[in-house]
Length: 259
Ligand code: BJW
Image (tube, rainbow, N blue to C red):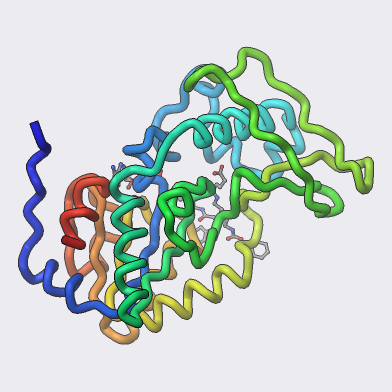
């Protein structure tokens, strides 16, 4: 059976049809239907005793590099093995459609995965970095690591040591993601702020809105009264500020919104 097309109110469909400059702020929920776990859900296996909040910090990496390194290697392997879902694809098509008629669709994501890109979209900003890129935790030199292929979603049974930096030979190689307490990449932040201010429609997709300063970016649209639409099965920290809330999975709501 074909899944039922979700009902989107006409007012919201009309906003989407009329928009020339769309800004999208995405979070882990957009990749959930691809099989990438979100942050605030239960961890499995080797990591069930830790929360993302415990592992995604420089202190965790410094105190227990093997566990943190292996957690990222496992997640990178999992991400490499999954595919973009209809939510990512809908945004990529919408971006192409707007561009061909002189419009824009800017994607600012908090996600460290590359599923927007693999769906064919250009991403304006990776506000929390990328799990596929690496650099030295001490000297900052870029480093290359090939993504391991673990068996399915199964994490490795033993933590592995992170490699040493080949440039300074002192620091440990780490993923180029933004941990708690670290600054966001300034250019990505500025580009996103500009896109939110220039937009005539803002979509907030699959984020809890709990992590600052990223979560404040879509609210910049409020300065100009730009309509804000949230797509999320649950209510979030940002819900009250939204003009419209589409309660459902991104993989169903986004294709329905852009028909
Ligand atoms: C679906 C769905 C479906 C499910 N369809 N939806 C102001 C106030 C309070 C605190 C702070 C503040 N300013 C800064 C802070 C501290 C801190 C912070 O925000 N803490 C809060 C937790 C309280 N922020 C920072 O530390 C930031 N840095 C900073 O402020 O630096 C200052 C500084 C300046 C100058 C010098 C030095 C420092 C950095 C934050 C970095 C966040 N990093 C992480 C990890 C990245 C690496 C990794 O991947 O491991 O980024 S944390 C994690 O959370 C990750 C995410 O990008 C981020 C956001 O999570 P997201 O995407 O919203 O996911 P979830 O899981 O929370 O939600 C999923 C949603 O999807 C849910 O709503 C579901 O319902 C929904 N969903 N299925 C649609 N099918």
